Image 1: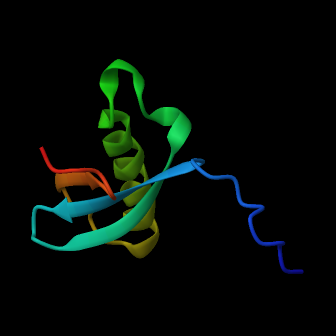
Image 2 (image 1 turned 30 degrees about the horizontal axis):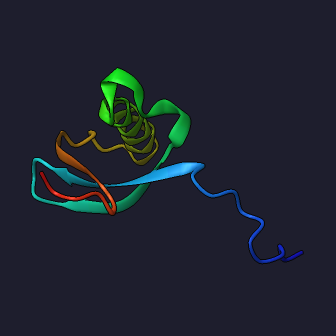
Length: 78
């Protein structure tokens, strides 16, 4: 059954664009918002995405790719 418009909680996830060492990119990777913030900022997102990549690699039989950079979607560049 379809949801009513506006019932999805805002701010539940933060989205990141991930660039890997081989030059490939994945957009809009979801990370739970409760992991982020505080003194570490967005650094916990790297560990969360690396764990997701390990699980995906395990299922696909390919080695996980090393992350080159991680950028929050919609954040201003420094």
